[in-house]
Image (cartoon, rainbow, N blue to C red; front, side, top):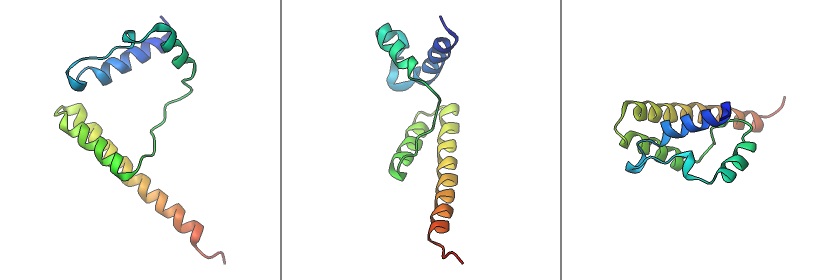
Length: 99
C-alpha cells in the first residue's frame, strides 16, 4: 500500500470512527473508485462556507461530546471569525476611494 493510501486510511479511520455509530472505511468503497479519487487529490483545503454552514459544522462537532470534537468546533469558530474579519478588510479596501 502506498504512503498516500495509508494516510487516507488513517484519516478516514480517525474522522469516521465515531460518526453515527458505525465506522466507514475506505475498503467499503470499490478499489477502482478509491484509485480514481486518489489520482485527483492535489492538496487539502478548508472550504469557505456560508455562516449557516459553519455554525452547523461547529454545532455538529460540539454535539459529538468528545475532546477532539470540542477542539474542532472551536477551531471552526475561530477560523470563521478570522476569515470574516479578513474578508471585511478586503471588501473595505475595494470600496475605499483611491486618492
